[in-house]
Length: 180
Image (cartoon, rainbow, N blue to C red; front, side, top):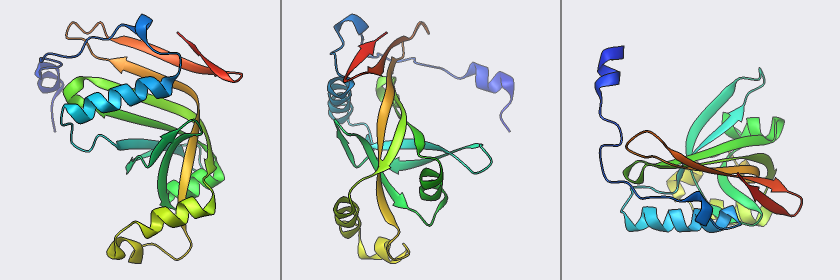
């Protein structure tokens, strides 16, 4: 087991990281996410679409797992899973979630919190059909769903070597967003 001393001695953010000035952030978090995602692709970040989905179980305890981001649109951030497993069952029982993505090479994190709804059946069916035959065979019939997290807040975090990290947080307000 790693000791406190070992953990404290490990280097953190000991590389060149992109600068981020929140005052230049666009009015819509989708635009900033698109820009940061493009930066992750350009930097060769492996699996830049891997996100941690956090849900709440029947006992009110948090649960988390890594899934692949399926879509990002004005409707929200989409992921897919089976309703026969914990993630899907928890989303059906308590339709709230958080998503987070961390691009280590860039020292960037995005956190999305919001309410969850199911995508239309044809979207889930198309996503299921796009999976490999072996992956489809492992999913109980009729249980594959695409879930959409409609954010109430989106936070962008940029690491800084001095540990004076920079953040901008968007909060849904009426039909738009406020930034802080």
